[in-house]
Image (cartoon, rainbow, N blue to C red; front, side, top):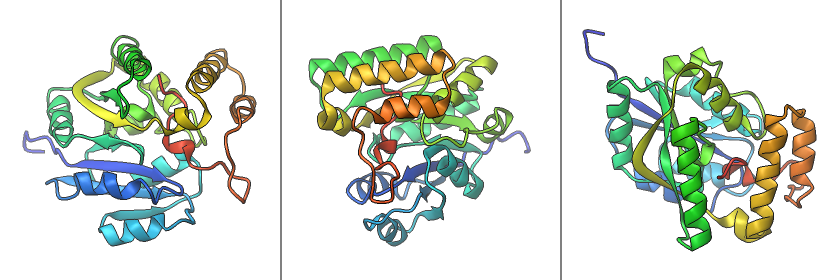
Amino acid sequence: MSGIMPTKVSLIIPTLNEAETIGRLIQSLNGIPELEIIVSDGGSADGTVQQIIHSGVVAVQSKPGRGVQLNAGVQAASGNILLFVHADSLLVVSAIAQIRQAVIRGAQWGCCQLKFEEETRFFRVLAKTSNWRARYLSMCYGDQGIYCTRNFFDSVGGFPDWAFLEDLEFSRRARRRVKACVLKEQITTSTRRFRKHGLWRTFWKMQGVKVLFALGFPLPYIERFYRASGREKDVNGCHSHEQSSSAGQN
């Protein structure tokens, strides 16, 4: 390596029917040197794939399920640093440079600080507790923009091939090895799921999911519990892409 650490970042975005959101994220980051953008689509039927192709980024077709899609994106990645971002999030450009610097200084994995697109008291408190959890408990969730080196990703076995909660499992494996490095830069995430299903209803549903996961309940049971809240399905019986909003939010 001639003493120089590669700093190419592969940004991987899982999508399923995200035509309304994916263009904004890609446009905000396109053109950054040494940044490879990969969109891993799970079978969108709303024009998402066409947007991806026209944007000029790397397009990957995958089976649906966030864990499967993220792993498929990694297979197509050429960067030494991996960054996983949800389609309904927005990342400041300076975060890419900060991730590179963190890795050069020895960080193996971590995330950005979370910020919600709405700055009401409810969402400010939610973001603050999420950032506290990531910084002091090394539990980084998908909506916080998880990053890691390629070698570290491989060493923990990547993401489990789960439809959701893949970020909780990845963090659980990762923090057993080393503490997460939480960046100063922020990632802004959508509040659409909270607005759709209700603030407190969504909040308590997420807490219930995390408790069940921590207690070791089987994933199919946790998913049934999650779906019982009224999460929508698409016409094929698959979940609509609220998969872009992490089940681990706060």
